[in-house]
Image 1 (tube, rainbow, N blue to C red):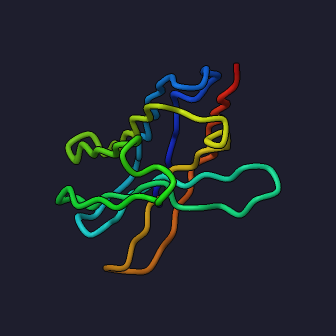
Image 2: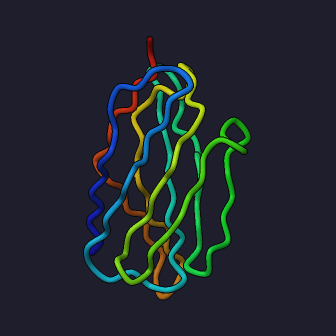
Length: 118
């Protein structure tokens, strides 16, 4: 079983920055992909960014060039540096672990609110 705890959300002005953290407890396998998703009111949950243990990452189109995901395998932690924030980035951000081997699983954190507003 994996438990995920997010932190770092809050209220920020447009153009500002925030850094989200996700700490995973339990066993994290090297094949696990850890990522961030977000869900705004009335919208579907969408991928923000994801990263492998080897450091390969991918981003949602709306955040490319503004957000950076990083991973510390020794600490079982993932971070999301968010720069040049826009009001449309306002959402609940969720940490996620996707596992294929040795068994398929999908773990979610409780979410952290990010609000971008003046």
